[in-house]
Length: 61
Image (cartoon, rainbow, N blue to C red):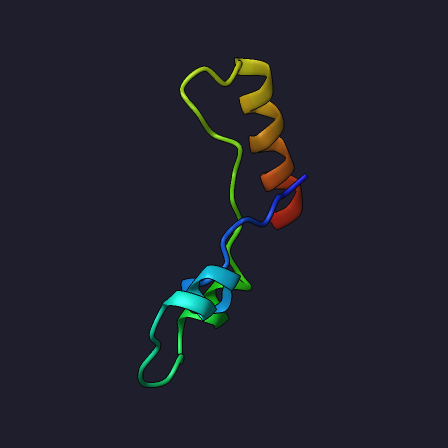
């Protein structure tokens, strides 16, 4: 399961309320739609690592 967490600051509620956005957004929103957050952290078990790796290999095969 892939989980999407990244929302560009200028698009999130706090960013819209408190932030200032100048110029054009040519990259941030586009890339945020393609971002994949992988479940990788220091104590990820070997079994879970293998699950992540096999899932990615299967997806990109």
